[in-house]
Amino acid sequence: MKSLPPIQGKNLYLAPFPKTEAFYKEYRQWLNSARVKHGVGGEEDYSIQEVKELLQEWEEDPQNRTWGIFESKTKEIIGDISLRWGYEEYDNDGPEILVMIGKHFGQGYGTEAMRTLMHYAFDKLKIKIINGGVYHDNPASIAMNKKLGFEFFKEQVDEDNGRAEWVIKMTKERWEKLKATSGVDKSI
Image (cartoon, rainbow, N blue to C red; front, side, top):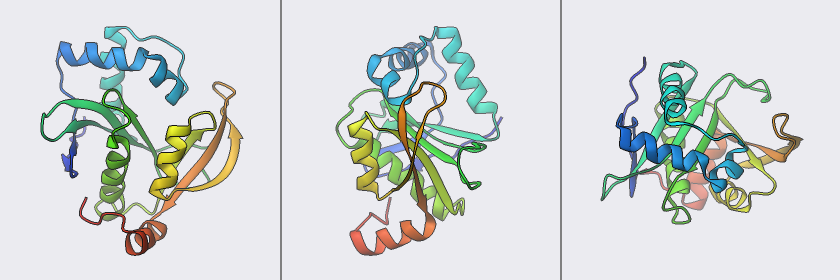
């Protein structure tokens, strides 16, 4: 079992998930919603027990660091964000970054959570490259990743569901250049 440090952003913070029945029920609703399934490429519905098992598996997996995303003022959990290692589809050993906003979507929380975690990953963990995947039919995710400055460099078909996706990446060098030239917030 690993301990994840809390990471402070401007309007949100990243911290371990609560371990309450109320949270498990809410998280189940998020995972089973059509919007989230479309965004993450999933099709199955989760039971409360499967949610508990999934979160426990993530907590124990040394190649997975998943935080809850909490709104700073209300302390309300609104989603999750992960760094996950071990994906063969990338031509490097950097982690994949994933974000899921369960509620209050469309308000910039996903973008801020990504910036917050990338800042931590590049500056504190000394990661050199971060990878990701974005489905062609997910315009909100495409816009967010372009706004963040990710390089869209390869198209492929997701073997799990047959959907077309972009493979994206951000290098530490690119991140530093973007911070210097385009005003990516250095304080996050």
